[in-house]
Every structure is written in structure tokens, then in C-alpha cells.
Length: 118
Image (cartoon, rainbow, N blue to C red; front, side, top):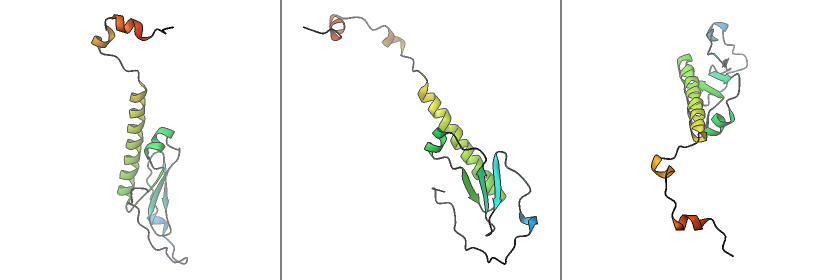
């Protein structure tokens, strides 16, 4: 992760096995859960975020110390992506000019502003 919240754990010995009972049996909709050999929980989004969300910084793969922390992080990424997309959509909307600007009076200066003088 770019925000520095990830920690690097020492790898476990190849002979160490993680009991299947420690693998999360719950799901986070739209995300695949992974338990590393070091016992760290990871989630990877099944579908990539939009280009807008990715460019804004949404992370497709996140980690956490607990299932609750992992769920909170995936929720944070989904919210971040949704807000980035909503902001981009707002920026794409045509802006309405205030009524006072719509009715600007034509003046001789304005009439001549676009004319080519020869």
C-alpha cells in the first residue's frame, strides 16, 4: 500500500503450516481473501477499479492484521473509489451560468470584439 500501513513480517519456516481453521470462512463481497504463509490477511478486488478511481489512488489489493481491519480497509477503498467517480462526474457536468451573466447587454465594445478589422 502506498499509505505505509502495511507491515513486513518475517516469513515463516517452510515446515510451518497454518491450520485450515485459521483461514477466514467469511467473505467480503467483490473481494477475494488470502491468508499469507506469514498469517497476514489480504484481500484483492475481483474486478479492477475504474481508471478514474485507480488514478485517484484506489488500491485493488489491501492487507490487515484482523478480518475486521481487512473489512474496514476494503470498505475504505470502495468508498474512496465511489467518491472519486462521483467527483469526476460532477466535473463533467455542464455548468449553468448565473442569470445575470446570461443577459449581458451588448455594447459597442462587445460587438466589435469578435470582428476582424482590415
